[in-house]
Amino acid sequence: MVTSLISIIGHDNPWPRTLPQDLQTLDLSARIRVDPLALDAVSTDFGRLTRAPAPSAVLHPSCPRDIAALVRFSYASRRPFTIAPRGQGHSVRGQALAPRGVVVDMSSMRRGGGGHEARVSVQVSGRYVDVGGEQLWVDVLSETLRFGLAPRSWTDYLYLTVGGTLSNAGISGQAFMHGPQISNVRWVRLIYTDVVIFTSDQERLISLDRKERFNYVEGSVLLGHNLKNNWRSSFFSREVLERITRLSSQHGVLYCLEGAKYYDHGMASQVDQELESILQELRFLPGLALQNDVAYPHFLNRVRKDELKLRPMGLWDVPHPWLSIFIPRSRIIEFDQGVFKHILKNKGSIGPVLIYPMNKIKFYRFNHFLSKWIKNWLVL
Image (cartoon, rainbow, N blue to C red):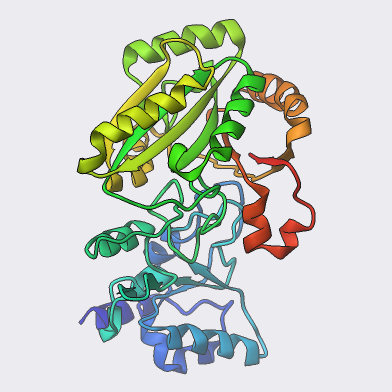
C-alpha cells in the first residue's frame, strides 16, 4: 500500500529531463519520487554551507539490491548521473546532496521496509552487533541494551546513521580507552582559565591506570558570547552560567574538562571515592567542579536534549562548519593564542569547540596510515 502511494505521488509529476527516461522501466521505479515535497526534504544538509542545484529524484530503497540496481544503471547509461546516499543528512560539505541526480534515502530501510528484516542483529555469544549503515546510533543503543550490552565507542550525537557518522570508532570522548559500559554515569565538568594547566590535566587523565581513570574524557572551549545558547550549556545551572560568564569576561576564554565514570548500583560508594581521588590531582578553578548522576543511555544521548532546546530558538538549523585537526602537544599553546583567543573570540563563534586528548598508541593499533605521522598529538 505504501509502495503504491509513493509511486502515485512521485509519477504525477513530469519526469525530470536531467535523468534518462528508461530509468522508469526498472523494477525499482515505483520507489522513485520526483515530486517537490520529496526533493525539498533532501536538498540541504546539516552543514548548510554548500549551495547546489536540487536533486532530480529520490530513491526509497527497500533493500540493498535496489541501491545496487540504481548504481549499475547509472554506470551503464549513456547519460550517467550523480548518486548520493543520505542517512540523516548530517554531511557538512554537501556529501549527502546529488545535484540534478538521485538521492538514496537510506532511512527507508531502517525499519525493515519492503518485508525485509530490520538490520540490527545483536550477537550475544560473539559480543558484537551486525548493523545496517542506515540505522541510527540511538536505535543500536536501544537494541543492544536489551541484552545488557553496548558498543564501546560512541559519537556525541546519537541521531546519526552508522554509515554516515565520521567518528564511528574514531575520535570521541571514549577513544583514548575502550572501557566497560555499565548502567550509570557520574558526569563531571571542570572549569579552567589556563590552557597549559587544562591540557596538562587532560594528559594526566588519559595516562592513569585503567582502574583509576575516567571512562570518557573530553574538553571544550567556552566563550562568553556563546555560553547561554550553546548546545552544551544545559549541564550548568543559571547561577553557574552567570559565574562562568563573569570569568569569561575577565579572561577572554575558559576551558571545560569533561569526564565520566561508569558504574552500577553496587559500586555507588566506590565510584565516589575513585572520583574524589581523581579530582584531588587536578587543578581546576575552586568551586567549579560540577557533577551529575545520569543513566548510561541518557549520558550517551545527551546532545539530543540540547538539540530539542535549540530547535525552537532557531539555533539548530544553521550553518555547521566542522573540522577535525590534529594538534601536536608542542604547538597547543601557540594554537590557543592564535585560534582560541584571537580568531574565535573576535569572530563570535557560537558553535562548540571540542578538544579530545588522544593516546597515539590507539592510532598505531587501529590505523597504520595515521601511525606513521602521529606522535604526541592532541585532537581538536
